[in-house]
Image (cartoon, rainbow, N blue to C red; front, side):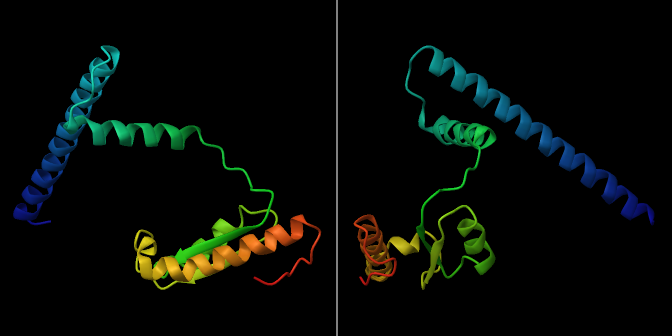
Length: 143
């Protein structure tokens, strides 16, 4: 390795270590400030809310235990969701799942009016089939 490459590699590593240290320091300050606000019953300032929300999400994710849903489900995915990911979600549904892909680019786009009209038809049909099964009707009752 040439001397200039060694220098750049060394300084790049030092820069990354310094960046990591700064991030850790900032997170420690945010954690301590958040704890102080919560202990005193004061409302969190806007600058700490995103940090706190992420910490709550992380804690929930760490303790959450995935269990299969015992019934049937309708799974709606945006066009950005891969078939493998839709199938993975279907794997959590013990009673079987109907998979539908909606022509929306992201999972939040699926909430736009033009997309809601499309997926609501699938959802309503699924609810009608479930109601028919609950009344002892055919398993494949029409919408």
